[in-house]
Every structure is written in structure tokens, then in C-alpha cells.
Amino acid sequence: MRQTDHLIERLWERIVATEALMWGHFQLASGGMSDYYFNGKRLTSDPEGISLVGPLIYRLVEPTQV
Image 1: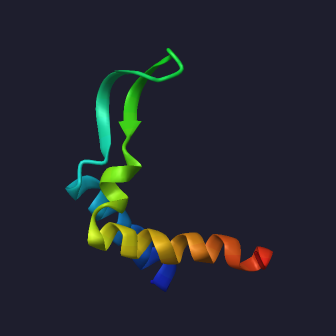
Image 2: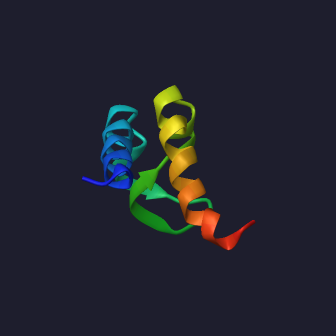
Image 3: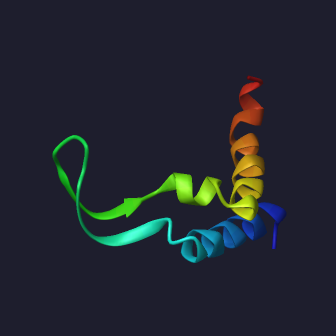
């Protein structure tokens, strides 16, 4: 298993553990409706969650030399 695959697997586990992904009926700020809601703040407020998000985002932007 590649390291990136392992990070993504652990990230999914943190998403579940922090209940960052919720299913139900949600009214969005735009007024639209959604059957799910992802609260990224819950995930990135979690120490392990942010330690996983950071390296994965870095891998996405690294090739752009930002």
C-alpha cells in the first residue's frame, strides 16, 4: 500500500470518528437542500485530522510549485 493510500484510509477513519460527514436533510446557506453535510471544521480541529489533511493537500499542490 502506498503511503498516500494509507493517509487517505486514516483520513476517512478520522472523518467518521469526528462525525464530520453527516447524512440527513440540510438546508444550505445558498437556500438549496442536501442529503449530506461535510463539516470540515470538525475534521481540521482534530489534531490527527489536520495532521492528515496537511500532507495530502501538499501532495496535490506540490507539482504546481506554488
